[in-house]
Image (cartoon, rainbow, N blue to C red; front, side, top):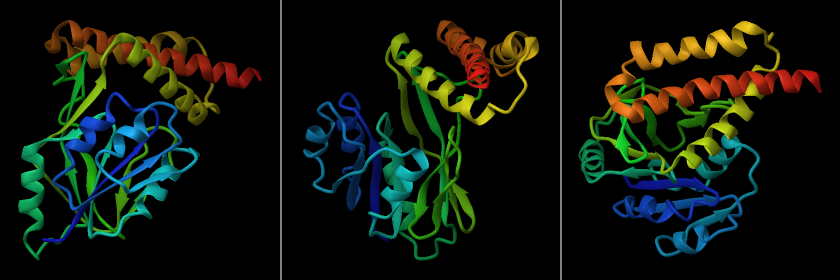
Length: 247
C-alpha cells in the first residue's frame, strides 16, 4: 500500500483542529498549513504533527496549491478543519489502496454535513461527493473564489464511507460563514445586472426549490433553517453585487 498524507489548511480553528487531526492519526504523515492563526490552532495542531507550515492567506486556491507542494507521499487525503475522517472511511481507504492495481487518480467521498448537531440528509446536502483522496502529482485546484475544488489528471472513483462535516455549531457560526461566502460570490457575479428579479424573486425561488423539491422539509426545523439561510445567502450576494457596482 502506498503511503497517505492527511492534509489540512486552516486559520483560527482551535475549536475544530484537534478532532480533525485526531481523525487523521492513521495516516502515514499529516501536514498542516496555517494562515497565521491568532488563536490556539497552531498549539493544538502541534500535539498531533510537527509538519506545520505557515503561509500568508492569498485565497483558497493558492493555499491549497501551497499545501500540495508540502506532500511527499503517493496519496493525499485532504480535509478542512471542520471535517473528520470516520474510522469506516479510513479502513476503506486502506483497503482500496492496498492493491497495486489502483487505476484512478482520485476518489470522490460522500460528505455527511451536520447543522446545529443534526445530519442534514436532503436539499442537496447529502451525499455531496467531494474529490478529497487524490494521487500526488496528479492534482490541481480549480481557479474559483467560491466552492474551489480539486481536479485530477486521470479518472476518478467513488468511495462509500463518509467524511463528517460540522458546518455550524450555532446560528452565529453560520451567519459568519454565509457573510464570507456572499462576499466572494458577489465578486464572481459583479458583472451581472441586478434588479427586482435577482434581489427578490430569485432568492425565494431558490428557497422553494431547496425546501420543497430537494426535500429539506424532511429534515425538520433544521431543514427549514438551512433553506432560509440558502435564501438569505442569495439575497446578500446580490445586495453586495449592487454595492460593488455602485463603487
